[in-house]
Length: 286
Length: 281
Image (tube, rainbow over all chains, first blue to last red; front, side, top):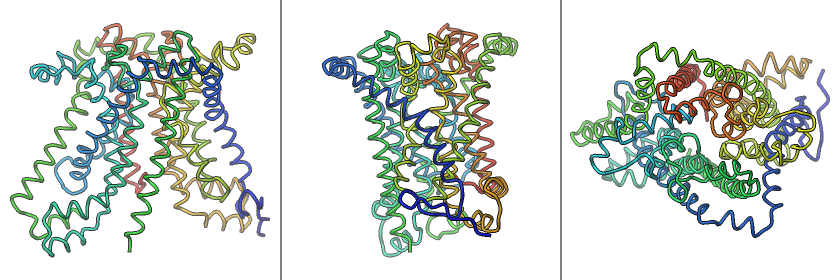
C-alpha cells in the first residue's frame, strides 16, 4: 500500500519518502546548537563593544602586522602549491613510476596528520641545526622563527588541497583533443596553453582558494615554527588567543569577526569556483 | 590510461623522457623536503635515546591520561557527528526544499573557520564572562577548561566530515530503492537500516575515519578551551605541545609518533576503502 505523500507544499516538495521532518529538524537543531548560535555569540560580543574599541583592536598596528603575515604567507604558500601541486598532480596522473600508488596515498598525509605533530616536526627539520635547516643556514637562509618558516608550514598544509582538486581535472582532459592538435602541428606549449590549462584552470583556482583559506586560519602547525614575535612573526589566530588569555573578550571577538568574515568570503569564493568548474566540465562534455 | 600512454606513438622522444624524469624528480624532492623529512624526524627523534626512553615517555601517567582523554573525546564526538551526517544527508539528498544549497553550505562552515575561532566561540558562550557563564558557575558546572568544553569544541570542528561524504554519495545513488521499499510497505527505519545504510557503507566508513582522525588530532580549538591542565584537560596533541615547550623532545616526539601512527592507519583504511570503488568527491 502506498504511503501518503509527506507534503508540506510550500517549503518542501511532497515525497513518498518519510523522515523529512525528523531529519531536517534534528539537523537544524544540531547545527544551530553547535555552530550557528555560538557563532552568533561571537558576532554579538564583537557588536556589543563600542565602535572605537572595535576599530582600535581590529586596525591596531599589531593586528595589521598579523594580517600581513597570515594573509601574505598563505598567499605565497598557496602560490607555491599552485606550481608544485600541479607538477605533482601531473606526475601522478600522466606518468607511471615505482611507488606511484604509495606516493598517491601519501598526498593525504598532511590532511590526516594532527597539526601539532607537523608543527614540531617541521620546526625540528628546518631549525638551524635541523636536517634541512643546516643546509639552508649555509646559504644564509634562516627558516625557523621567520615568515619563511610560516610559509613552509602552510605549504605543507595546503598541498593536499591543490593536488586533490587538480588530479581529477587533469584526468578529465581529453587526450583526443591533444592528439588532434598535435597532428595539426601545434607544439607542446601551445597544447598546454590552449587545451590543458583551460580544463584545469577552475580546479587550480579552487585548490588555491581552499589552500589559502585553510592557511589563513591555521594554528597548530604554524605556532611552533613561527616564533610568535609580535609585529614580526605573529599570526592572527595567535593574537586572538593572546587577547583571550588577557580576558579581553571584546578584542578577541573583534578579531574573530574579521577572521570569520574572511572565512565567509572564502567559502563563497570556493563555492563559486566549484560551480564555475562544474558548468565548464558539463559544457565540454559531448 | 597509463597503458595507452605508453603505447602512444611519438611520445618516446628524448625531450619527452627528459621532461618526464625532471617532473618526477621535482615532485619527489618536493615531497621529500615537506613530507618525508618531517615524518622520519618524528620517529628518529622519538627513538633517539633508545627504545626504553621511548616506552617510558609513552607509559608516563600524564601521557596515559592524555590518551584516555583523547579516546573519550573521539568516542563521544565521532558517533554524534555520524548521526548528524546521516540525518543531514537523508534530508538533503532525498528531499527538495527551499534554501537547500544554503543549508548545505552552512554544514560546510566549520571547515572554513579557523580552529581558534571554534574554541573562541565556546569561551564566549560558556566562559565566565560568557552568555551562560554566570548560570554555570552558580550550578557548579564547568564546561570551559574541562572535558565537556573539549568535546563540544571538537564536535564543532569535525561536524561536516561525515555529512560531506554522505551527501554527494546519497545524491548520486538516488532514491529508487528506498521509494520501492516504502511503496511495498516497509517502515521508515527498516528502509533506512536495510537499504540506505548498506548502500552508503563505504562512504560512511570513509567519513567516519576522517572524522576520527580530525577529532583525535585537533589542536587549535581544544587548545583554546582546555586550560592545558596536565592529567586533566590535556589531549594528546596538547600534551605534545607541553612536552615540546619543556624541551622534552624525546617525550614530545614519542607522543607525536603515536598520533602519526594513527594518521598512517587512517590513510591505510582510506586506501582500502578507495580500492572498494569509493571515490571521495
